[in-house]
View 1 (cartoon, rainbow, N blue to C red):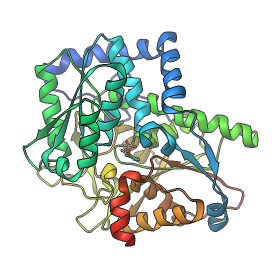
View 2: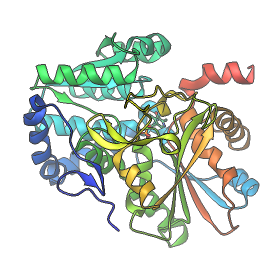
View 3: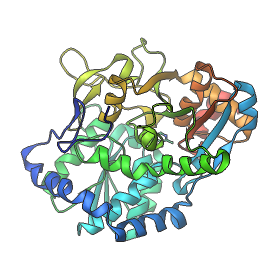
Length: 392
Ligand SMILES: *Cc1c(COP(=O)(O)O)cnc(C)c1O
């Protein structure tokens, strides 16, 4: 079985590049150039130096002793929460900003839902002195005021998307429209979604996570492979990064955890693999939540970063080939898991990452099992939600 992208941008039957004709030139430029650039020695040297000194990598692999006792396994946390800006997203924005520079682009555009990707993009634009425009649904701008303020402080222009439901998919439409009108700019996508080559490119940048896990487990146990790798999935980038170097190790069980919101059948969910069907979203053939007319069903999750109606094409392929197991966790299960990690290990996780932690109670482990949970982000941004739910 093959889990890498083919030359047309497909993982099995998922992927591709369904883009308007006006974008062919831009997409072609990127498709032809991304591998030669990111595989060059000059690029690798600069990327690795920034990951080390700016992001703070390698992120630790922490043995969670108390959690391990509770679940009867050897549980390790991959601490992406300790990265600069508080999550894994910066691994990808650093990679893409270096690529944009190598392509000679000076203007960056992005779309953001909760604002986390917008902040990670505005951060690297500030670092590199590049012009940054972020499209964001008008509703999300109101809901995510602190992230809007961060982006502005970092020098980005935040443009409200006022059409449709005024959320992420509308921001995406406006970003693509802007790209068509400004073909000299670079479109910086925040997850393993969108048209080829973005899913492959983002997975490669995030693959530093599993590369480090391998080295760290090798040092601890003399064996680079755990029994389980568990990660939450919105678009799928932290999971893709955590799975990447284990895809061809069939003994390593890969567990992807989606957000089921109020419950899979509640109508208030973001569990794409549970209720989704095949279709095109964001320029790629994948699984998505849509009604009979092909209209996107508005997703819901307490966690803004998992509130996405699709999933990257690699994950649709991992689901179909059964290479990864897809579980889901509700809002309440994620909240319980967040409180549990906080009380047992003294780490306040992001709500997204709490969905991955919630899967620990859904799997029966053997005491010898080495389990890596990708702790994709820290909980600072979620304190308001925690205050409300835990009456702090
Ligand atoms: C954005 C985000 C996610 C979800 O995005 P993926 O592309 O699925 O990784 C998960 N965790 C955190 C902390 C995030 O900020």
